[in-house]
Image 1: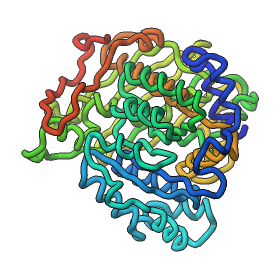
Image 2 (image 1 turned 135 degrees about the horizontal axis):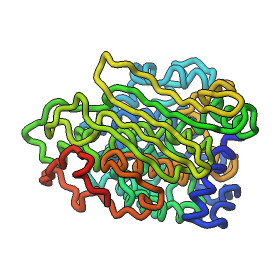
Image 3 (image 1 turned 135 degrees about the vertical axis):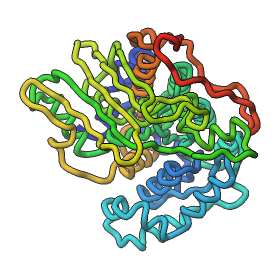
Image 4 (image 1 turned 90 degrees about the vertical axis):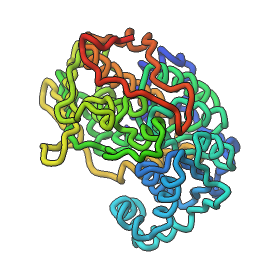
Length: 446
């Protein structure tokens, strides 16, 4: 299976519900070079929205993926985050540390040469550094062809919608929302992206990883029989926690500084991090689960505002349309606890971890940007990962809500959910209370 075929294949179930067969068919048409101002040998001009660690590394990945891409605009709600990112992108020592494996795998050229090339293509002048809640609009208004959306996921639906309206090709980090209302908003914008042939590549990098792609194809070809059951396990440490609050920070600024502690902006671990292993299972099955029950809670996180309102462990039992079960477990425990991430696909004639029937390829973090650029230029069939990442995001939200509420949640229930967690005003000093940690029996699914 070619990588872009792998990407489009599992969109079909969701496309049929949301976009219709005509849009699904359009996924296999080639972009006309004249539709892209960066076509041919011209440079593609990129903008970065969200200048934290993931955004900074995504910019490095894009600049590594193609020597004819330059970064020309950056935006973040915090000036200090933006300036740190820009400094790192121009620092050869940082670039040496963050991407030696990726660079060596991809180009085969001496690392120092590639680092020098990346640095020279960071062409962001002071007039194109934007820091405010409106920064993403200013990045999109710059003379760019492609935008990297790497902010915390609560902001993703609005920013994705704006990028589509601005006619930009998009790399979007996962997940694409933290609530059902956001997923629906993303899908509505995605329809316009499909119609305009705007390339959309998502940060679900396993779908760009050669050994995963080959293994999924062999499963589908029946190499080890029919899928009987699946498991997805993500045992990690806390991703981010700011252990103090500056007295000058208003509630909204504080919650953005410590964004991984709050459900409205991060989605909880099930949605923000475990999506990788859940997305892989959806890919294998070619569809999404139809129902789920879940459990979870807080084992070590103090029930204090400083630690927000997310769980630190969560399990779920999903059921796919054909009756196959997916058992899922994730947790974020402090240093010293066992850590490992893995999948197991049990079939009637054997089992696989998703990798062992394939061969290694280029680093997937770079490869997903190779796909991005090649689709924009028309070198490969039109690529749009939007529906697969939307479907997997909603799968994870469904499990989170099942664990929070203690009730079984079906796909139809989560699709119809009225949950909208996003604040209607964005202001650094906005007063925002912290909802309590969800308690099953008290928490109400809406």
